Length: 75
Image (cartoon, rainbow, N blue to C red; front, top):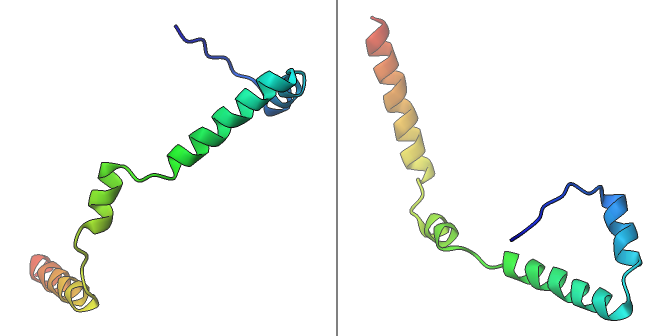
């Protein structure tokens, strides 16, 4: 079971400063471990980063086509 509480940053710092050296070391290790894990990319990020992208020429062609369609619709 997990308990969650809203603690202001200043309160968190105060609590952390009161920890004994052994618990402080454990806390520091956990925080750094979480930071290292957040640097890894997820499968979704990998998929999105490796997805194909439009070239400038393709984007210009799309803009030109949209403009032509909008002209046609307003007539």
